[in-house]
Image (cartoon, rainbow, N blue to C red; front, side, top):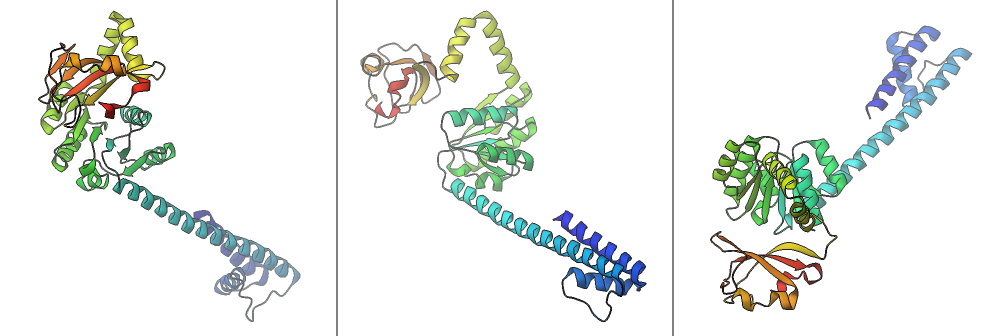
Length: 321
């Protein structure tokens, strides 16, 4: 669009100067005639008086009409693109408005990208919030639902459906930003499960106070994983394959025991999960947060408990429990 306007201005300038030199017209007359020619409205009493002027007029007509067509085309393209963009935004907003039990990822840096990749791999529905328009374009290219804005702004979080969301991952660059986002998210949804990124130990404490259910430091987790890999490489390889690969027929999963589950009131040893469904109970987390690893057969299960299990991929139907 800007190029077309510049070309039109250039044609008017060249035409005005040309008629001043060839015909000896005054600047205002030369500009007036050039504008009439470019607009295809014709001439007035002032007309080209010689062959050179006629040839120059033909050149101005061709250049002017071509420039006008270019301008009209560019304007139409801009209008159409704006309408399409507006339609896409409405479609995205409509999809987000109907989301339920989804996840919200705040920040699309390296940590946010990995989080989104894993959520997509697990076929979980999620919305990404980032304040960089170029990053938003990249997110849209990946096919993720996204919103451009400040994730610490209540209006943006509400727009992302935080009141209906299941979880939120805040992974913006600054610890202060993650604290503000956590505070806002917790105020808007007291039952939301929040995972926050922290760069420092001090930030971990603040994020916990702000309402984060889990606080992860990429540096701490990375350092511990590298040390564990050096000390117990086979164990770490096995865990990494279970958690991040589809190559095996077994994987680790967590299953919440609902009030209508057949497991309520049953002892671990009598569930027969391993015999009937190929599922091994590794640990039980009670509703109060206490965790029991390698539970004894006599352990009684209750509604609200969470089972950490190793189960086969072919029997991956948690609803059966």
